[in-house]
Length: 453
Image (cartoon, rainbow, N blue to C red):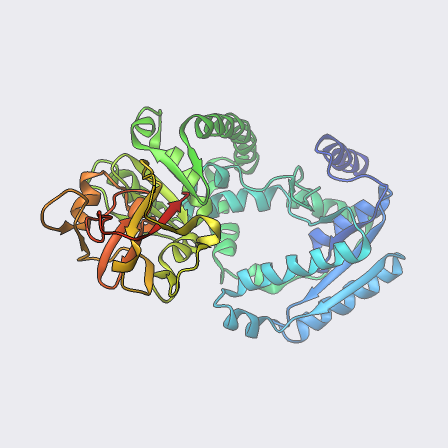
């Protein structure tokens, strides 16, 4: 490929994918290696205003310093703005429990984003090319992946753009040779110490003995899969609109609707994977749909509860709010006023004389003989072993049995609140009133509660 053809391919790729325009600067990640030197040279030649940003990870001793000095001198010789940073990568990786590769990636992109904002740049250009994309696909296959991993690198990911994706490493090296451009060599790239290097140095050469054009074939397959992914994403989005039931702080997946989908596993994967659930957990969650209710699956920030009819996705933060951080007691009434409210106004009460009192007939109200109550009254969550005596019944029963008879879900149980006087449960807020402390002909003062769910 001639130099004009090489430049035309890059320029066309940038335009077709709307990666860059010439109205604002672009941050270019430059290590001093062949790919990044070529990228900076090409973008500068095509008329883009570049800021060359170099990261020194201090992992290769004098070689790291050599790379930094070479990059600085080359960039300044070309009249391009140069910026740099030096990282203590080993300490960062250790403190954050990261591999060296992942630590470098995080440090690099965080700093690039900082520079993008500082310079008002439109994007961060990195020198990933077709060979890198092929290596990433094979790496994803080795580790296990979904459809997104099969499409490998994208031309744009947020502010990060990859103008070199349509060209190979060999074509980049040919451009450097034609332009008489120098670059540094990272000797660790020539050693199979890392998994990616093993794929580059061992796996791909073996595949090329089977098909000399395997790189191009894999890249074409990835482009085809990208089109398939668009259809897949559209189908998943439509299914989510049809299936999911969203409430404040939770998402419900009706199991009967889930079973009607062409692939319940794919639906659950796309819903739960972004929430931190790993593939093995998602398999267990799908299998739990055919089991008894009550199973709970935990991710760092979310949980999934298998209810009788639904899978319920809820944030762990909401879980903490529901059960209380240190106690199950939510509120206390020590000395009732004539009128009062609690629970951010959801529970209100008033104290009235019994004469000519009209009893409310709905579940949102509860009335008791004020003079029989033992204060303080406590509003709390239910506890295992709780018993109460429903109004009109003889004897007490376990609250858990009552919940089961009323078909409470685990979420419903965790959200249920009880009004208690001492050890006696007076009322399941918004539901059943207990038999104790009822109003009689001798009652002189009444306390009436009103609860809004």
